[in-house]
Image (cartoon, one colour):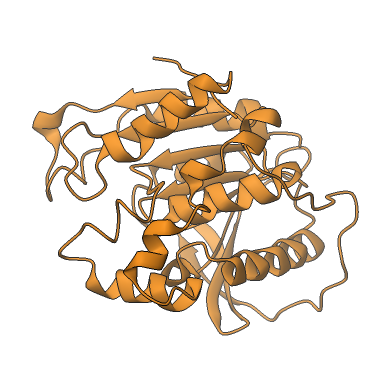
Length: 270
């Protein structure tokens, strides 16, 4: 199933990598590959290194929960992709978290020689980081692959009775005085689709139609409708609701070969 989209802008050059001091890493095993873990400005971070890097050193940048639904990443690292992650998930994609991501981008590109345009891979609340980063730095993103992504703070965490902690995080990191300020905010991913569409960034989402945690109707499907008005499209994979658990938010991952092919097509050789 396909669909379309467009919205706002900021440009960060990918042609020049700023100098960053190399970090000291600790090696461990990740699915049979070497995981190089390190502290980055007080945040846990890592890079998984393939046994032989693909031409151009392509990489996947996991914005959240890097060990959840790692099936696509496992296949990609087998095919020469690096996998990278810096844990700013609690910051919910606020401007400060995007600035940390910029510095992490400079570091991993400099230390591991990674390509200029990674595939951003988001799970749930990581959609906030992936989409706000892509909207404001479109020349740094090859594509976005997302699993049940949050696209609107007004949907999650605001409406979730179980997300009081993340709601407090949203108020704190975005500097909202109260919930009314969050509701009035116009910088959610749903509000920032135009530059993504204008840059023709390929998008692929996997969603559940009965997701009560991050309702598809308020997040991915609303993004799809807005994108359609902007003349862009996303690949949309809808899972069988009978296979879901945890209020429809979790399910066995489907479409793995197609998702691997999607990322390879758009991020390899960037």
